[in-house]
Length: 273
Ligand code: C2E
Ligand code: MG
Ligand code: MG
Ligand code: MG
Image 1 (cartoon, rainbow, N blue to C red):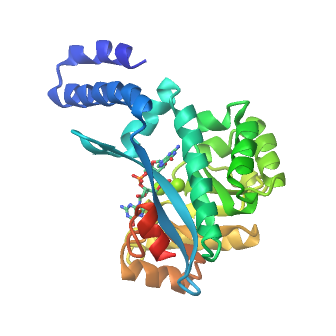
Image 2 (cartoon, rainbow, N blue to C red):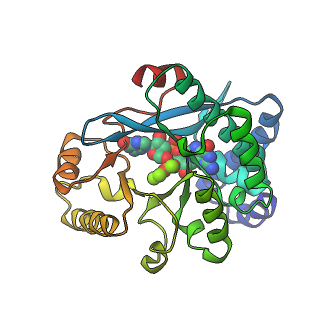
């Protein structure tokens, strides 16, 4: 609980720390107010096929533009939303908005793409999640194969809880991706058993891959392993031409990053498509 943390930590009188906690408390309070007037919006970032440079998907990323605090990044408020339980309504809104947007693009006659939505563990463990997701697909009319859920390794690997849900989602035709791969504790043994379609290799392994031989070796090994397991691979956070060249030489299939496009608002994303 944030108040307990405040109580135990301010005693240290570390100005940096109390600054951080003050900011956290502020965001916490603003978040509680935010759900009343719903200031959130979705941005979209393309996922590119390196074979033909076409977008095969879009990842939706939540944005919160605050009138006085400016843009509050998801890394700052999603963890708080998880702590307070607000992630449930926020997460459901994200899913519905993302499905609706993808349906709009399809109805406008654009070539169909997969919409990737980030999921928090809390949403995943909610017993009403599957039913709510079904209702969203019904309401929006989006066919399930055009929806992908991104889940981090940590959540995936809690195999006893997750496997039945993952199987259910897969049976429904929804695609599944492991996000930020390489940063958590992945068991390669379980990877074979998980019904997932994609691995998204974390940006930390992609940065300076053309000169960092250790990262290059790791990515090469992940590509080989993924081919064996029939998993698609997305390289996250590609920013430079040199990184792209190295990934193409290694035979990486998909990439995402500022080099291709930053996350953009729906209208701009429509133009990209
Ligand atoms: P993520 O799912 O790994 O998303 C990728 C993050 O990397 C995004 O940050 C994106 O803007 C950023 N990014 C993309 N390409 C590049 C690049 O070339 N260079 C750099 N430096 N960064 C790049 P963002 O939008 O700030 O989101 C951060 C994290 O917040 C996401 O990481 C995801 O875990 C979480 N998140 C975002 N939207 C949602 C949401 O709707 N629901 C949930 N549960 N989590 C979300
Ligand atoms: Mg993601
Ligand atoms: Mg990621
Ligand atoms: Mg990442």
